Length: 304
Ligand code: BEZ
Ligand code: FE
Image (cartoon, rainbow, N blue to C red; front, side, top):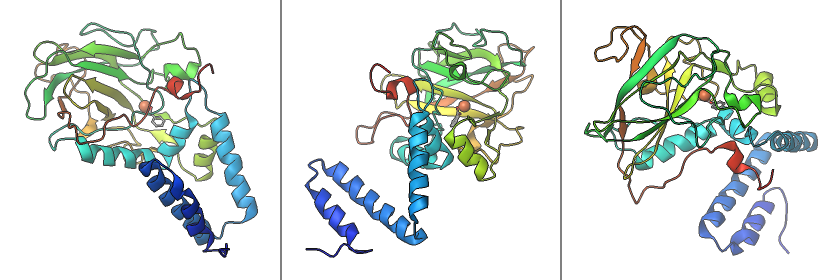
């Protein structure tokens, strides 16, 4: 019989799990147990702390609904989503391809479709109107015709439509299509910075750490075209006070923008505009696919 002491329990758990038929699951779980046990030994985890952790994770699970993914939020504030994103990017993005950013918990499939130049602000909540325009090309700059472009962001009060908890409400999000030369243009309002949801267990956790909980204003963008790797990214407002302290670590230098008047080629010279050219990487059969995130409704068990 093995000695299941402070150190002996770890190899015993891993040995018992060695019967896992799926080799990748076996590898992941062996590493997870190793690190989890090391963590408990390093901090000398006490019973009340262990229970507090379990109560916290229970509350995180209970806060999840079809409109809210508290576990993704937890992953985001711990920087895990950023890390997975960066590793995913390194595998499949061409060097000149646009950098990715977090999908976040507020993406929704099947957003309403708009024609070029239309505004995603369908319920007038105020805010300064701006234009987003540019091209979709491959990494070498060759235009990709007819790419699908989804954008979504908060309204002028700093909330996503999903935060209303009503599935019938779709606002501040839309699908556009680039033209035959890869050009696109759309209207929205200048995105303001906002707080990640603070009314749940993850928000309380962020508060307890003395963090502000803010994200700099941004527009989420998802670009798709056959034969190219899906691009999930976001454009961040340069003048936002939290541009250097994003609570979920989504900002990259190449994604920082500033709406300006008088940009050459801007389709509406009367409005401030952002020009951004999205460069897609070719699909690489060797690189892992998949999105780092999902529509929250797809992560709930059927019927809930
Ligand atoms: C967002 O950008 O929508 C977001 C990302 C991570 C956590 C909360 C919000
Ligand atoms: Fe966001």
